Image (cartoon, rainbow, N blue to C red; front, side, top):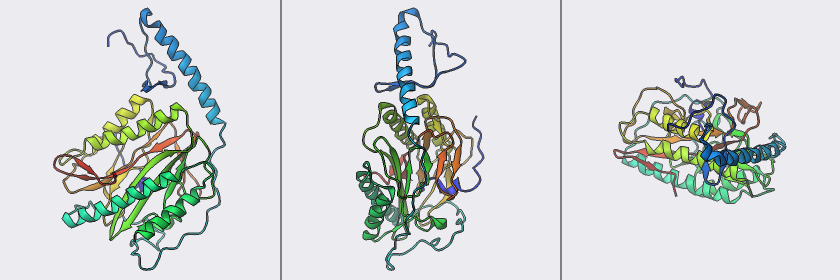
Length: 353
């Protein structure tokens, strides 16, 4: 469940602040073509490269026309939320089930051999469930139908869907469509051709939580959306690549934000990654944007990295349900998440099939 470690409370404080190429003062919208995504910078070039400017102008025009078309899609609206699905009595529940209070954030969790084995099992199940959920993403399918199918798979595996009952959350997964940044509540909303949807899966198996998420495409999407999703997933990969024993946590956010900026996208600062294990959320809190927070990783730590990117720089707005968070201007968002184990030489991705 994306960034609940700090996403529902106060945002963690942190500071964010070629010789023939000269950046102009007022950069236009980012341009994307082919497999290349041009960063949000614009340059003057020599006359010999004038054809490049013509190419960029044509591509920009095409992108703007595509953007106009995408904005005609009706904004996301809350559908009908069906009753909470039952969980067999023999399946153990997390301690927070039954309470509508936000659980206190506990200190960091270091895992021994037994704990790591338990986490591997929980994370492997979460990855399998997410892979299955992705096969359900098709036009006309409702997010509620995806939730029900995933719920059944989780309980058939003898696990509990971690989001269900977390501070009163009514469903077993989060489904965040198009401009929904995170924590979308599954309902009667039907997916349409050209939509994107993040499915966030978390399971509680034999006393351990494991979580992962991915943004899927529904039917056919244009190249600009494909590039956006590719960039978002690459940002997650870059964040993971710096993890190992003794490294500062802040390097994760710096890597992610630098790459997002290069591609011309923006990192949502409101939601964070977090420690995970026997407790659903714990320290450390993982900031996905450039920051100067102190603290170093230690071998045996397990936490999530789950950056959310938006196509435009915008604020986030949370609906009256207290969960569904969308971009204020309707621009689309994408998120990818893995749970990782810090080792002496790097990081093991526990939620990778």
